[in-house]
Image (cartoon, rainbow, N blue to C red):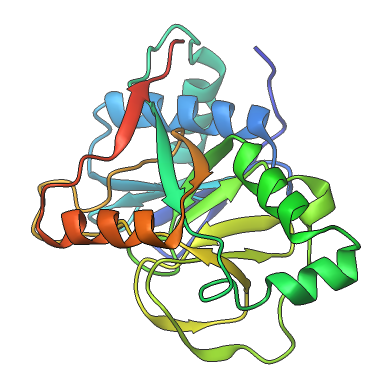
Length: 244
């Protein structure tokens, strides 16, 4: 198990920020989630929440930290003592996407600039298995790593004011799905009919950091059928437990 050189620093009077090297990398994700689990399971006095991003953890306490450097020393010791035997319950999710022109607003422009056909872009996008690094920006917005380098594409210079719910898009080296209508500057290549955030459920977002996501292509008629099932509350999303 690789040890990373981490940076620890106070973040306000009730939080400590822990940072890994600034890159999107699966080994960093695995180490980060392992350390996060160790912190959560340690029952640290006053601990409220541990939030994670691509390469950082924010440890939040319910009161001001009296001895921040003593707490950092404790966290450093916990990192050095972490073990890799913790078994996760992560899942591999299969997400339907319709890449037809009615939804793929920027697919033609991407095809021209990348010199890849639409079919090639769709194949590259749907063949990859993505890792969920964290959830943010909007409730249920999954930040995914693993986009094929051939599909890396700069964000739009002028963001759209209205991006439809379910829009599947590419921005820079990332891909993701807009869980609700919102402004957005990513390049839209399709749409998914499923719900990524449902406040009526015990777990509003089905996925969590460490899960895997794979998109698969559906026709417009298949999309409409799935959407009807989703709206009726009877659609079952395909998934399986990842074998550690």
